[in-house]
Image (cartoon, rainbow, N blue to C red; front, side, top):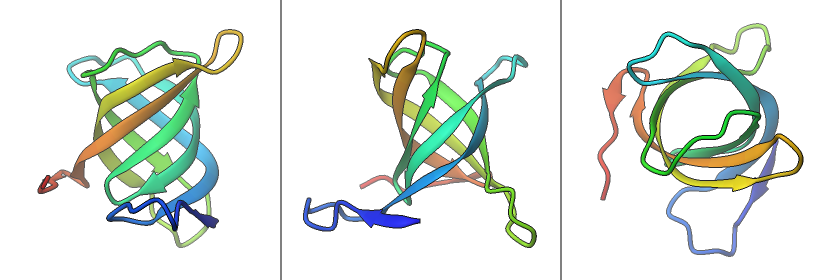
Length: 106
């Protein structure tokens, strides 16, 4: 993991990662997947083949696949969704829950 954005005045440090993320749109049982590329206390960025709209709430699990390291369960609200190539989208989401506990948003 690499720290990124140390000079961009963010409240929480972002970490560059490359790990699996699975998610569903809140209220749906359909499961999707992608690759999480960036993670912080306040949000995550990932690539997926699923087009998501700004404001969509998703329930996600980021599983590092490392023994002894538990998966992280998050609820994210999509704040940005951009094309990232043929049939791929880069999604940025703000964390609203971590392991079922609401996150205080300032």
